[in-house]
Length: 302
Image 1 (spheres, rainbow, N blue to C red):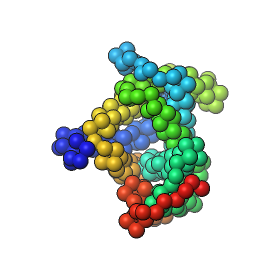
Image 2: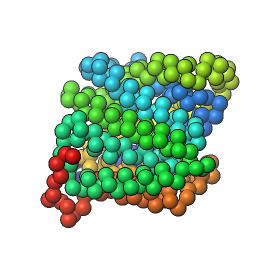
Image 3: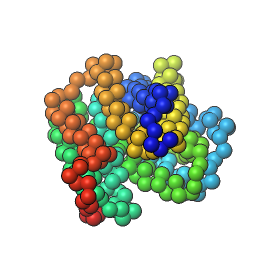
Image 4: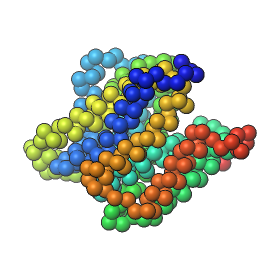
C-alpha cells in the first residue's frame, strides 16, 4: 500500500494513537501528584513489562542493545521528562519541546553515523534551534529554566534511543512491540536506584503507602495506553504504509498536548512561546517535506 492513501480505519487508528500520546503529558502531571518522578518512571516500566512479556517472545537482539535502548530511550528520556514536569514545566509545552528530538537525531546521525545533511534538514535545524532559543529565553514562574533544560535533555536522550533503534533494526524484521516490552525490564532497577539516592527512601515509602487509585490509573495509562497500545498501533501503521506518510502525524502530538494542558490545568502560554513553537514546528515541516528551491542541494556533514 506504498502509494495509497490511508484507509479510513487506519486513519482513525493513527489519530487515536496521536491523541493517546498527546494526552499522555497531562496524565504524567496527574501521576506526579503524590509520586516522585523517578519512582513514577520505574513503576511505568514495571507495568509495561508485566504481564505483557508473558505473551511475547524476546526478539533475537544482542543484550547490549536491550541495555542501550533501555538506558537511553527509557531511563534517560523519562527520568528527565518526568522530573521536568515535576519541577513545573507545563505539560503542553513539554509535548512541544520534546519534538526537538528529531533535530538532535539529525545531529547525532551526522556525528556518529557519518550521514550527510540535505539543505532542507539544515534549514529545519536552524528554524528549530531558533524556536528552542525563543522558548528558553522566556523562562520564569510559568516555565522554570530547569524544567525547560531537563525537557531538552529528554529530547537528546530520545535522539540517542533513535540511534540505538537503528542498530536494532539491522538485526532483521522483528516484533517491535515485543522488543519494547522486553527492553522495559532494563529501566526499573536504575530508576529505583536513582529514586532511592535522589528522592530518598522516605519519599518512596510515603508514596507507596499512600498510592491511590488515581495514581494507579495514571501509571496504567502511561504503561498500557501510551506505551503498549501506542507502539503496537504505530508499528502496525508503519508496516502498512511508507514512513513519510505516517511520520507527519506526530506533528499533531503537541497540538493535543497543548490543548489538554489548557483544558485540564489551565496552562496558558506567553506570545513568545507561540512564536518559538511556530518556529520549531516550521523546522519539523521543512525537515519532513523539504523546500522546493533546495530540493537539489546537499550539505555535507559539518
